[in-house]
Length: 399
Image 1 (tube, helix red, strand yellow):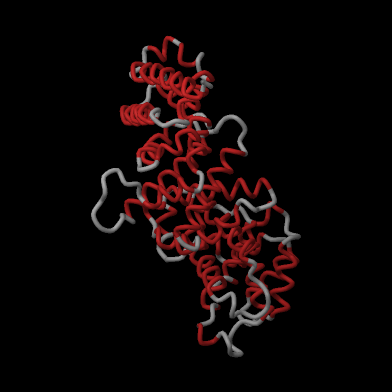
Image 2 (cartoon, one colour):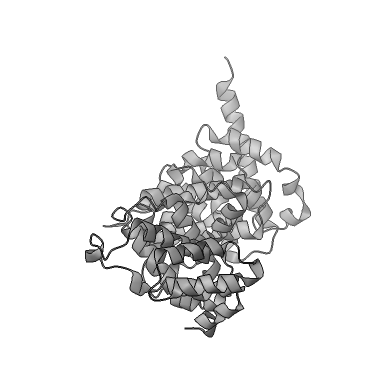
């Protein structure tokens, strides 16, 4: 135990708060003692809040977690004690304590949260509203995880990513904007390190693959629709996380049986069918090229090309061509131009491509773009678009 969590630190509290906290931490404390302490927590000055931690740490002693067998006996928790332990957890969440105390505080918080959530239907009273309980836990998890070395102790016990999956469902419905943005950041921090965690936990907490796909699309949609015309570095980072997760899931969940040439992994297909293509195109980020290339090159992928170009895919490609990006991104951009070129054989695609090209005419007539590696393929795309469109117009002309 870190010295800062020793009960002797209660001496730094105002006298009345110190007496109340000491009584609540006594081995034989009563429910009334704990109730007085919880009432006093809000009255302690902000500058003194950290000195409440020794009491809160003591009250979260895992020895107080009853066994499953004891839940329905007098030795189990009462309605009052269930509510009080929930209040203790919320008090911990509200204190921005030094992160170096995380290795001591985290196991106790996780132990109680995991217990309360697992047995929520068997506990007395109506305590656990998942839409509030899980996001508040995510708030603390994100705060602690955003520190070098935190993963080692936070992943030592199972349960973190299951609860992250449960919380994810409620993040975008959080009414307070500041809290919602904090939770989104916490979510991105934890998802970014998913490779070191148990993905099955996240899937289970999110209620299965289908629901997880829907959550990803909703998350990406929120990022793009609520940031104005441009994306911040953090938004790009969050977007990378979503794409990374999709790629990673396919690596750990490969299709069974023989692979068919150019088949689309089920996870990508489900993302595409739920509307992720226009969202990725609107992101105008080179990070999207790889996943879009896989989606659009699959069987029937051409059906989504009009949606992609209408939402800015050609602008994204043209913009990236003028930047000093690595060869991998340039090759993905080349692939997309080739896919769009080939798709011009389909009746409804030339008009969509032509409209998108006219919107970015100024961008593609710069010296930088004409000097880019993609320029020759781009010109071939422009020329063929005009030819195909002329054929379509002639076909539609009366007589």
